[in-house]
Amino acid sequence: DLSPVRRALLSVSDKTGLIELGQALAARGVELLSTGGTAKALRDAGLTVRDVAEVTGFPEMMDGRVKTLHPMVHGGLLALRDNADHVAAMEQHGIAGIDLLVVNLYPFEATVAKGADYDDCIENIDIGGPAMIRAASKNHAFVNVVVDVADYDALLAEMAANDGQTSYAFRQRLAQTAYARTAAYDAAVSNWMADQLALEAPRRRAFAGELKQTLRYGENSHQQAAFYTDGSNRPGVATARQLQGKELSYNNINDTDAAFELVAEFAPENGPACAIIKHANPCGVALGATLSEAYQKAFDCDRTSAFGGIVALNQPLDAETAGKIVEIFTEVVIAPGASDEAIAIFATKKNLRLLLTDGLPDPRQPIVAMKQVAGGLLVQDKDVGHVDLTDLKVVTRKAPTEAQMADLLFAWKVGKHVKSNAIVYVKDGATVGVGAGQMSRLDSANVAAAKAQRMATELGLPESPAKGCAVASDAFFPFADGLLEAAAAGGACVIQPGGSMRDDEVIKAADEAGLAMVFTGMRHFRH
Ligand code: 93A
Image 1: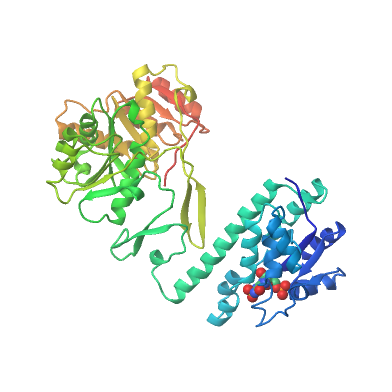
Image 2 (image 1 turned 90 degrees about the horizontal axis):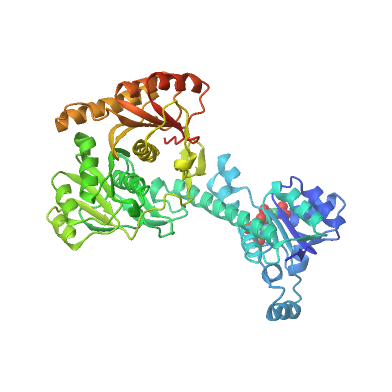
């Protein structure tokens, strides 16, 4: 799959590293073609260059708007070298193959950034460059395309390692980088035009997705919002069918997603699970022998908060569960299907939205997660991390019982979906206290304890349901205080990442309090 580099077209606005690249290519006997300014720079350095104008038979014209847009160039970039028809066309029209394209585009983004006027920005929209980049990228079976000065060295190293040739895998990588560049370039142009037209941000189409729906408003009524699908067609809130109820709001969609992604952590073959979400945090999550039991246990954790909540199920909605859900006001229910009876029960509650999917979101699906910050974008892998029994390390004298281990792992999975700092109390496969989003871990432990206390009151229990519970902490306890707070609330065993400077102190405190504690070695911050 090695392919030779015999002829290169260089057309760059940013001339950094150009001369060195030109010299290295010339030293390998590569013929150089170039556009006006680039050709001049290379010639000034003593290199032999052919002008693209000579190849096309047309002068660069219209202020350079038309210089490389010609079949002599695009034929040379696009021709399949192993296709008889293509080769015949090249011969007939005197088109020579171009094996390497080095382009960096008119500095549109920099022109906008320096506050240039409208016409200047328009003139800095590169047309010929992206056209060549896309052509060369498509033909990566034979053609190398370099769009970034930082890749000049990699190109030369690849050629040096392969006697002047490049590998298919290398050209593939270059092509992927190149398409990312043209996509980002067009997005920059589109967003700039949206600014010029004073369009609301969410209605701009420069997203790598399809507009599904413009929303009435965003998180608040003064915010514009829209909902895009990503084209993957994966099961989830974006592809769910809504059977009834009014249009989903921005917050409904956000919360429904949080609920469904949480409940999807529990594989349906391991039994029914239910999650109830308010403000993107779970106010109750439970497993059950039946789906209705799972719902009831999730609901019982925090009945006050569950009012107006979002319910997600890991199994098709059945009539018994539907009957229970309609007893209180619920905003949205999402499930991988529903029985006809269940649908009929919901039909009596016109405002209740029912969303059905063909499956659960895959909690292991690698997805790029993005967060906007002032002047930039933070990008990371979605948190698909998970632990199972074999990953856990018992660090205390006391080891958890089998039943405690099950509750610990359950609490850990729930904690992954709670905003940090997260402390989760679990008893018999159900949350009994969730402490979310506090700035101190101690406060989160307190919130979880207070919730457990209120659960006792709401259900008329003789004691706190947190008595003897399993405790999960999404990150390590930096001090023993948070751990001791959880123990005071009734915690009997603890799951946490470990890794604090004061682990010894925390383990000692756990031993003294008679706790069993396991370390996961993995953290689940969620902000
Ligand atoms: O105005 S263009 O869109 N029309 C073209 O045909 C064309 N071909 C290359 N801009 C075009 N280019 C761009 O010119 C390249 O992408 C590169 O940024 C620049 C290099 O011009 P010069 O070699 O004259 O400095």
